[in-house]
Length: 126
Image (cartoon, rainbow, N blue to C red; front, side):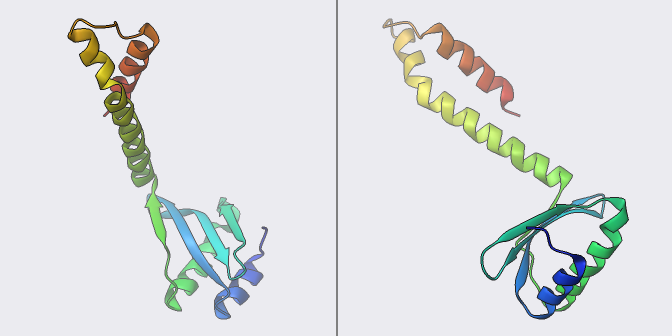
């Protein structure tokens, strides 16, 4: 949903929207996500031309007591993404451990594709 800066200012004053996410790079606001009272959402990646205006609107929102659900820097987002990848990889390894144990106990060999996927999963864990 496209929203002009004037509409945002109006919605802030009327408490008809909340800012749900902000993304910063080195203390510079780069991305805004908002949710309106009707449940619709909007987001904007900020360019140099409009960054200052959005920064002012976000500050106005915060000054009026508005709360932001999530504020993230690039480093925090990268860390969250790596944690997600680690969790997925560990889950896959855990789910297939029984095949390794079965093979080591002299049973059926683990399929080659599972061995390859396990190696890939281990390499993704940081």
